Length: 177
Image (cartoon, rainbow, N blue to C red):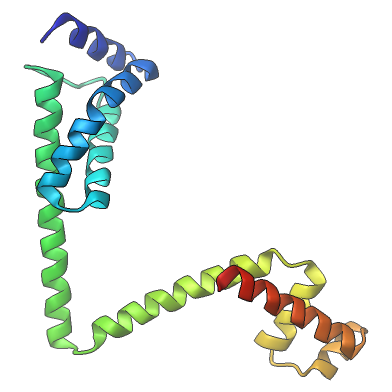
């Protein structure tokens, strides 16, 4: 291992973030290209490269590199890629087996995930509403009260209820599409 690499490694072992950043900047592009050739998926490759660097930082104190940092990183990248490919293959086999046992479950599973994501987005959009507007929307849409009942319960006019509902629906439409 060359002297410069020894110095960087020693600084990383002392938890020097600048040394870690230097290592990251020096090897990230090459590791990413290598991971893309192994995984054939840019997003997965980025995750793999980041996991290698996270592992190095987490294990920095007990890290022992015998040859060069470069060879260590590329070997780590290869192993991380293999693990991701094995996991991906296992997930695919499980998904196929499940769809054989229960035809249509994959689609219902995906619809369930999409429904949960939509619920989360709706909840987040509703949180941006003023309190009174959110309360009117909740009483009307979630509790099933008619506009007249909401107006009576909150001691406001039916026109005000309609205005709050219109505003809430406008925000939802804008935020969710």
